[in-house]
Amino acid sequence: MRFLGIMIVLMISMIKNNITYYSPWEFTVQRAEGCYLWDQNDRKILDFSSGWNVTNLGWNHPEIAEAMITQIKKNVYVPMETGEEIQYEYAQALLRALPKELNVISRTVSGTEANEQAIKIARAATGRKMIIGFYDTYHGQSIGDISIGYRPEYVTKIAPLVPQFSQLNYPSTFLTKKSERETLDDFFTVLEDILKNKDVAALVTEPGIITGFGSAYVAPKGFLSGVRKLTEQYGTLLILDEVGTGFSRTGKLFGMEHENVVPDIATFAKAIANGGAAIGAVAARREIIEPTTRDAVLVSTLGWSPVACAAALATLRVHLRDKMWEQSAQKGNWVMKILSKRLHDHPKFGEVRGMGLEIGVVFVNNKHEMKPDTGFADEVVRRAFKNNLLIKLGDEGSIQLMPPLIISQEILEEGLKLFIQSIEEVYELSS
Image (cartoon, rainbow, N blue to C red):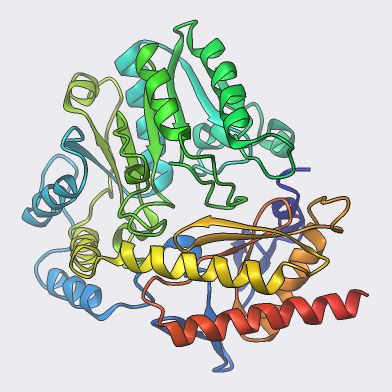
């Protein structure tokens, strides 16, 4: 069953230090630097999670911290009916890094708010209500964002979700006998049957891979360009959620660059400021967003604080200067090659897949049945933590590897050694 891994985690969510935790409380971060965290006992932990793709440039990057300190000494807040020079500077820098068609920014405080705004813009711009998403994808924590990708049976206690949201199966070839071409052809047939009714305001998707609390499923090449063609044909807007894929994580500065697709609306958060401050953004075509600014209620009390913008600007400059996407692509390809080779004959190994340094390693019951083994994957995550490696449990028997992009080859090899050691230890104990 999809999302089983996350459901296991949810069942043991807890309260610690009078704070609710979405997943089991792991440790107190005493300090953090680069690719390492230190816990309350000063234990040094190698991080292969980047805070779920937030600290892509490593923890507490000095250039970002310096930019924030400089801005704090100037000003920390402006109300939403005003602006500040650092906001204008960052908006222009972000737009220059994006396709020229995306030429207007809406300020938000998070990915949740950015995706919520994108939905409102799409409905206001098209006059349509239907929103299409994909099962078992994560787009944020509002009721609207949950409606995009959560299966209703997993959130019955907070139902009803927002009406007129519909979900499709993601076009993945794992555990199917179909080729990539057959998978895409079947998917496009289903999608076109829905879109030809011309009542869909927008389709919301990540650009070719499921990140977040997800499976790291990778769609066959041609998925994004095919979706763009069909949405344009039937007057449906394309919303690309770049919250997890943006800022060099998948081997391109933005995921949309893999197939050179320009959406109507794109959303950003997470790595946008490298964890320095809460900030999100919506980038859209002017002809779509300008007529909707009032009807879509594009306001955010704390969106784009000057300090957050300073952090985001410094973050973007490092990505562009150091071409971090190239490092992500090179290191990611190496990791997937090594893991495929080292784990190929392991009885529990199903598949390694990913884009850049967004990598999913899938474990199965056995090579004959090839059913995802979430329990085994969960035990590997726990064993790895005992071995001072922080990794994350994904969906459908997968473990997500998301190390900081600045990671050196030496530290990357150290992490993979600990990961493989943890797999072997868990297997020995379970045999």
